[in-house]
Length: 331
Image (cartoon, rainbow, N blue to C red; front, side):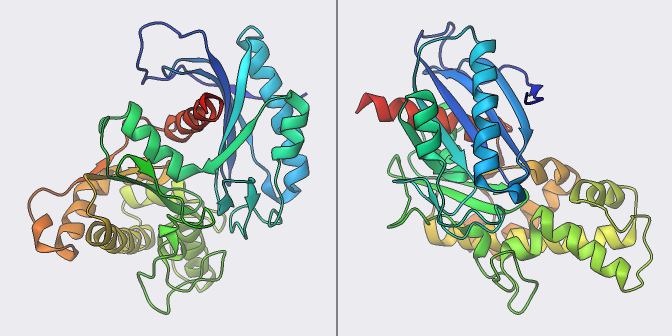
């Protein structure tokens, strides 16, 4: 039996009543994975989440995910489903669901859970990168509904980006497009899980923030934080005036602002939407982040800076997974 945590219905939906057509949607992150029953208008009949425990391996995760999907399907009244859509941390090949050296899903390289889930449910299974699908969901359900050129940046255990250009998601030749977490923002800086030194993920992800504090404490820095502090604790301590926490948070803001300025210059989107768990932690520093981004970005962004927080919250990637599932069966 999988113990799961029910979650509230989606706040964003396109219709006033469910459509009667349903898919199973999944969002797999480095820390947690979520499953839900979603209709084509964005209605959720059931949702739940459990820990990913990626270090236990893909086979273990796929078995627990199967159980979770069966539970939400039962919760929704055993509806007829047309497909399963999976949003996942990557890199991942969307054609096969095969992972390619995913830094936050250790041991999953060259593996796919598509065959197991397809066999278990007798349904087509489609896979996409979580940030890419979140970007797609923002153009369909979010405050920027109807946008044709948009970037979604997820700030979480890792950092990634999804790109929609001309109304279509940009996946690249192998599904690896959007790895904004590996843009170099501090040459010679800290390494991320993939071994890139000084990249955005290595400097400003939840993993990096926690690691920076632990390293400083181990080196003798005074702090109210313990040696096992996570990113949420670092943000909380910074709001209470802890000097080390403030230093680490300000360093993360500098790295994020540098990355955002680069994305604006490269892609010229209608907006960059920020989501992921760290976005909430950045709330007290939101204006500081925007100001620093304006300082670094091209002069045309000195006034109107199109950087916004998601209005979809944690639902963005799950909604994106439902969209590709409906698209798969629509042909």
